[in-house]
Picture 1 (spheres, rainbow over the protein chains, first blue to last red):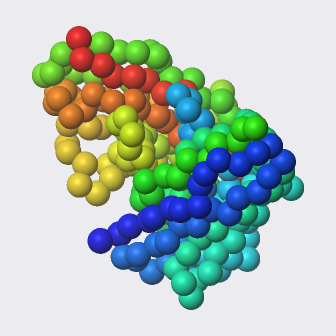
Picture 2 (cartoon, chains in turn orange, blue; picture 1 turned 60 degrees about the vertical axis):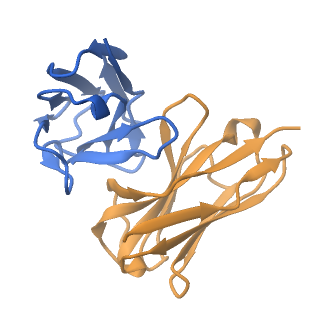
Length: 125
Length: 107
């Protein structure tokens, strides 16, 4: 069964840091780009970061560029999101999501065919 | 940034009725438009990609159409499990964006 399982969310003060993880199973992890998509409480969806299957190419939304770092360990089938300098507006459920198209080397915008259950990040003093 | 505007914001229908949801892009996205369904407390689920292709296992009552800037998701005969929030998403370029959602509620 194809599965994504996020962890690492929690309550953090403004200016603090968190590291999210997403464990993947049931597919050839390094063949697919992976993404982080967040959803603020009661709001819509926002793609904040993506990484190619090889890990060599990355994308960041303007709202997180310079503060968040996406990475992956293909030997562990795990995706990460290091979040620094957190702000109240980063409060959201963070989902990891698999890109639909197999593409090891390059990073192209894609749709998301498999999603994790999400992990809640709350930034508040 | 490409803005996606969904209409209506809320659609109230009864089981068995036909649902038509709209998504309009601020500039052409070719056919790079997808639809997702989200139920309370759950992750989104991919329904339609590249405007009209059904995701694996999706019932045939769901269909998508459109190109350029105007897109439609149609549910031919609503089942009780179809009542949810629906989002469109464009992948025309980086700066992937989603619409604000249409809530499909039971009348």
